[in-house]
Image (cartoon, rainbow, N blue to C red; front, side, top):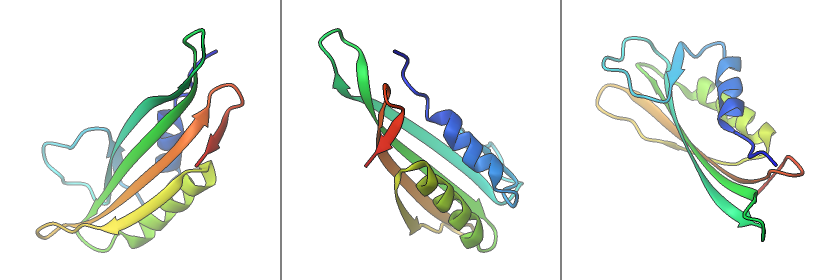
Length: 119
């Protein structure tokens, strides 16, 4: 049994947002391209069977979208894409000095055998 890597699915969602200039798992040394997204993932075992196989994995994904003007439409596209994957999604404004920022948090449990995402 192979653990499903949801990072690939996150990348697909971000690549599908045409209005997003770029994205990465790291903060750039200088933010010059907007809108820009930074994403982080955390995967923790949720259910391990008696043979030590990770049957289910809890995923927590944090996506920050930055812009110099409103990034609401970009955030809506990302939000909708993550919901289509089956994640429970929350969104909040979190502006910083002179930069607009929306933070999207996604949570779910993936069954690595049935390849389904549960809340």
